Image (cartoon, rainbow, N blue to C red; front, top):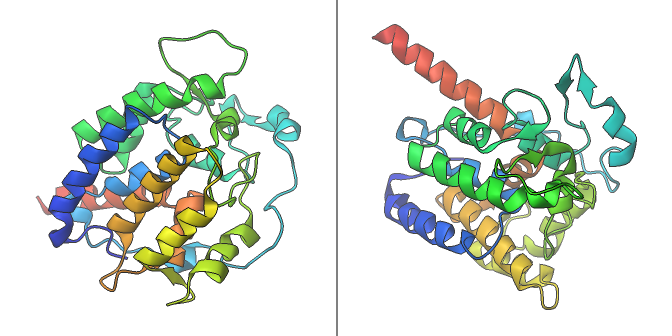
Length: 268
């Protein structure tokens, strides 16, 4: 899955500027962690490929994990370190940016997280400011405003937007049958991928009445994903989309970048 091709450079710059413009008017959503990491590939990582073997693709028509958020909050610390709920895909997305594992993501940690997966200084800085500004209040219900804009990882499900696919439930857990529905209902050209028109159909089908904020958030997320990760035939593959939903790419991207940097250092 070549996420960034040479001929897409101009398009990517336009998407970046357009996306940042939209973020002034629409608050960041939890999925933006998943989206923004796709903008992170430096030139030396353009040929990175995603291996489907990293994902358990077994379809299940039930919520992945049965423990509720309230039931697991009291067991989310091990040796003083916050541990994301293994059944909460949104927590796993955001926990990567919790660099000191205290359950709270501050803007400087968001910055370091984006740098760790290959983002440039400018994108990392913008991401840190806008993501934390947009999500902090929603993940800290009942607490006073903080100029540090902390994001509480355990409450990331409270910032979930409408007009989405339903692949995340109200507690942030991954719902396999909803994921499979995306392709059953919309993947007509290839059963394991979406074309641009099929993606438009998915977005239209998911729209909730008078939910312009949700429409815009979903459109931005999916369109950036499609632009960056479609193959040469214009297909956005199932394995790629699953990787975005289950948060499996972050650790892998950091490890690949670290390994490449170490190899480059050894050569020098």
